[in-house]
Image (tube, rainbow, N blue to C red):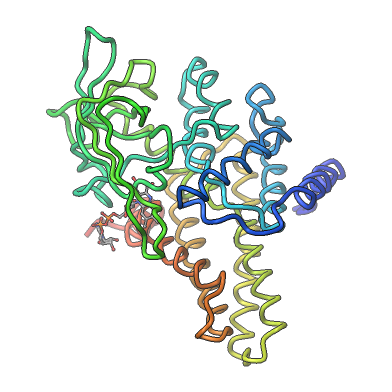
Length: 376
Ligand SMILES: Cc1cc2nc3c(=O)[nH]c(=O)nc-3n(C[C@H](O)[C@H](O)[C@H](O)COP(=O)(O)OP(=O)(O)OC[C@H]3O[C@@H](n4cnc5c(N)ncnc54)[C@H](O)[C@@H]3O)c2cc1C
C-alpha cells in the first residue's frame, strides 16, 4: 500500500498552505454560534469562496476546483493546521450537498449549490423534534399536499436546530402519509426559513452561545421543486445524509490531527505533565493518526465506487470519543483555574457523543447491522 501523496497533490497542499497562511485571520473570530460571530464567519467563507477554497471537491461550475477526494482531505488537513475559523456553512456543504449531488435533480443542484458554496445562503438541519431524537422515525411534523398552489403545507416543530436562528434555509423530514409504516410516509423537504408561517427562536447551549433554535412551522408553503428525492421516500434520503454526517465529510481527520498536534505542543510547555499524562498525549496522537489512516481506507473505497453503510457508525463512535479524550488530557495538564480555548473545546467535544445520533444508538447499529448480532 502506498500512503504517500503524488507530486501534484503535494503542489496542491503547498498552494492551500500558502493561501491559508496569508489569509486566515490573525485573531480568532468570535464564535460562529452567536449573531455577531456568524456574520463575521460568513464574510470569511465568502473570502474562501472567492479564492475557490470553499468547496474544493465540487465542480468548477459551482465554485469548486474539481479536486479529488484525496485533495479534499489534504485541504482539510491544511485548514485545521492553519487554525482557520469553524465553517458555519458546514451543514449545507458537508451534509446536504453530498445528498444533493447523489439524489437531487440537476435543477436543484444548479439553483442551490452556488449560493450554498459562497455562504450567501446558509443551511440548518431540521430533523429532531421534542418527541423525536434517537427515534427519528417518530417525527410528527406534517406536510400536506396543496395541489392548487403546487407544493406542500408544513405544520409542526423542529428543535436543537444548530445555528437555526441565523440560517436562511433548513432541510428536514416531514410526515406526508399518516397511514404508512413509521419509516415510510416521510418526505425530505427544503424549507425557506424566511417564508410566511415560520417562527425561529434561538436558545443558549451549555457554553452560553445561542447555538440552538426551535423552529415552529405554521402552514408554511414549500414548492414542489423543493422536494429532495421521491415523495414518501424521505427516510432513505435521510440515511444518505446520515452517512455523510457520521462517515466522511462532517469530521475529517485533519480536525483531530490538528488538536493532537496542539496537545503535543501543550505537553512540551507544561511542567504538570507527569508520565501518565504524557502517555495519554502519545495515545491521543496515535489515535488521531489511526483515524487518518482509516479515512484513507474509506476514501480508497469511495474512489473504487463503494459507499459507506452502517460502518459509518464506527467512525462516528471513534471520532467523538477521541475528541473528548484529547480535550480531557489537555485540561488535566492546564491550571484548573484557567479558562482557555481547551475549556470551550471540551464543552463542545462533550456534545460529540450526542449529535449525529447518540453513541448508544451507534453501538446498537454496529451490533445489529455490522456484527449481525440479534436485537435481543
Ligand atoms: C450540539 C448538538 C447539535 C445538534 N444539532 C442538531 C441539528 O442541527 N438538527 C437536529 O435535527 N438535531 C440536532 N441535534 C439533536 C440530536 O440529533 C439529538 O439530541 C440526538 O439525536 C438525541 O436525541 P434526544 O436529545 O431526543 O435524546 P433521546 O433520544 O431522548 O435519548 C436520551 C438518551 O437515551 C438513549 N437512548 C435512546 N434510545 C435508545 C436506544 N434505543 N438504545 C439505547 N439508548 C437509547 C440515548 O442514547 C440518550 O443517551 C443536536 C444535538 C447536539 C447535542
